[in-house]
Image 1 (cartoon, helix red, strand yellow):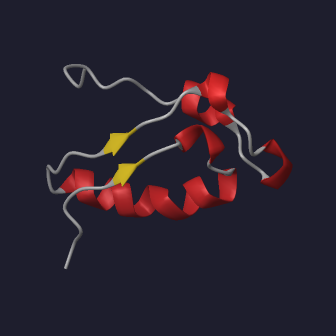
Image 2 (tube, rainbow, N blue to C red):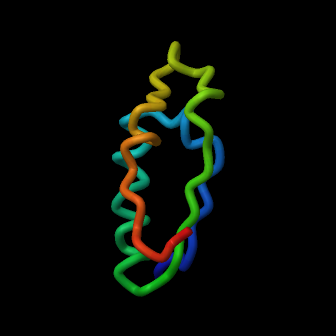
Length: 67
């Protein structure tokens, strides 16, 4: 079974380890043609003390036709 869609909110507070854990799930979902949504605001990052890395949100690729 594959989860079809993922919605990740407050992504600016996601740590690198959390993102590395989620990425294979999202890649698998995308390989089946499903859409995923990542939402956040780098200016609102408040969890640096626990590994939140807003720069990985800023560095996410923009997929043509996705906005």
